[in-house]
Length: 139
Image 1 (cartoon, helix red, strand yellow):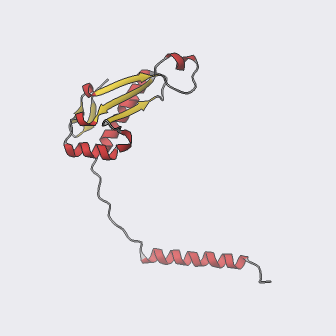
Image 2 (spheres, rainbow, N blue to C red):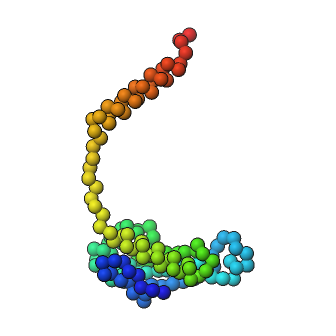
Image 3 (cartoon, rainbow, N blue to C red):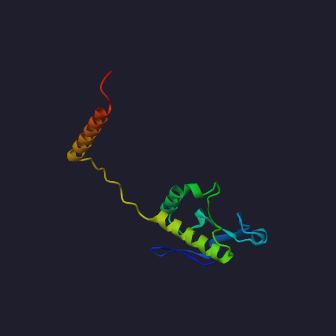
């Protein structure tokens, strides 16, 4: 395994990462039944070398991937090779943590312009007129 570089000088040492292998699912013949190619990488969020503020960001933004024990888990079974799956899982873990720590700009409220509202209303009137013309004369 390797250290995870999260940018801004933040490095997660490989000692904090746990790796487990298991048999991958899906089609693949005898290879699937005898080779453990699926790789799961886990890291305890509390053990990460981050400030408390950053840990809270990770917990809130990755809440769906963190279990009750506070462990972030990433699994990969895309390739038939265990090494490729381990690299893919490490890359994904690094990407998830890096994206969770990015400062997001606050959203600015915007308003629809008067001209846009007017165009929308005119289009609705044209559409209404078209449908009205399609109906036959009253019986």
